[in-house]
Image 1 (cartoon, rainbow, N blue to C red):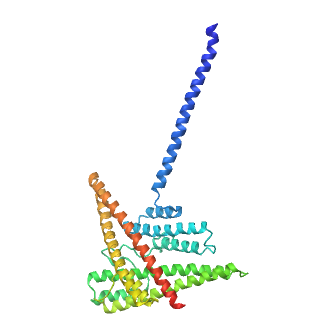
Image 2: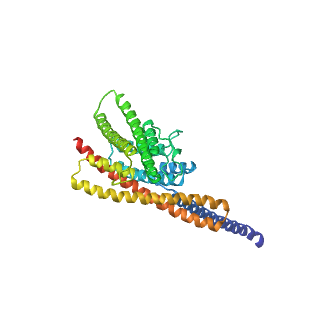
Image 3: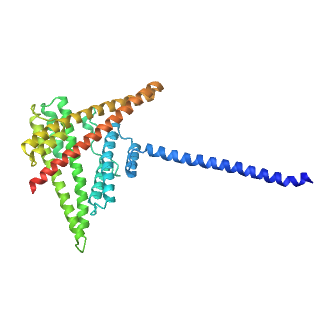
Amino acid sequence: MAAAAGAPRALAALGAALLLAAGGRAGKYSREANEGLAAAGAKQREAAEFRVVRLNQVWEKAQRLHLSAVKLAELHSDLKIQEKDELSWKKMKAEGLDEDGEKEAKLRRNLNVIMTKYGMNGKKDSHLVDTNYIKDGTESDALDDPRLEKLWSKAKTSGKFSDEELDKLWREFKHHKEKIHEYNILLETVSRTEDIHKNVINPSEENLVKEEVLHSKHRELKDKLRSINQGFERLRKVSHEGYDTNSEFEEPRVIDLWDMAKSANFTEKELESFREELKHFEAKIEKHHHYQKQLEISHQKLKHVEETGDKDHLNRNKEKYAMLEEKTKELGYKVKKHLQDLSSRISQGLQHNEL
């Protein structure tokens, strides 16, 4: 009887123990699952290149397109500038600024320029000329402008340029093509904005603000067109006469900035200071070019070693490539940021001339 009476108690105790054990395991598994999810989330955040989701999407798409190593590094620098501007805008928006949406619209335009520049806007003919000028054949890129094609053809056959000077001149032609392309993108964007503005039936204070925004866009277009015209005149002169041995600058972007600075409302002292800053900027660009070249060479070596299957050699080349890639990205960002700052200062000087 005692044994029979103790049986239910034993079963109850066994059941309680099983439940306790199951509960303990469930708690353990749940904790492990949560920890796993947290680790995965942290890893995902760590893996993300950018803090803005859509910029990560652009970056991932670019990698799927198999752009060259140098182009990927250039894109990374462009996206870093875009990320900085977008995070700055988010802070402005949180503080109730940018009420007319002008800063947001500019960010959209800038991203559109980037997408177009690297052939990611869905248009087959959207690629700008390759920013990686390290090629044996300069004929692979079309200039898409009869005037530029004619000038380039004359320069090549003139006998006034060494091979090194022809490479330098070709970079100037490509840079000029990029400027025209970016101008056309901005022009198309402004035209769309104007069409929307014209279709507004009842003018209001908000529309007056947008009209001022359009005026600002037209000033931007005017600055870009001035730069294009000055650039073409320079190309025409150099193509016919050859390079001036006493020329102050060699890098196309620096030459552009210097030509525009001389037209801006700067005092002699300010202009001299700007000249010195441009010399430092050109040195920074040359250093960036050096790392671009090394990165491209390293990329070619890496592809070759991957085919041989030598793991030790492959790992060493991967480490070198990763170092060069990071340095190229870092320098690219610094160059583009410096260029942005210099261009802004010149633009302010040019606008002051018009007041």
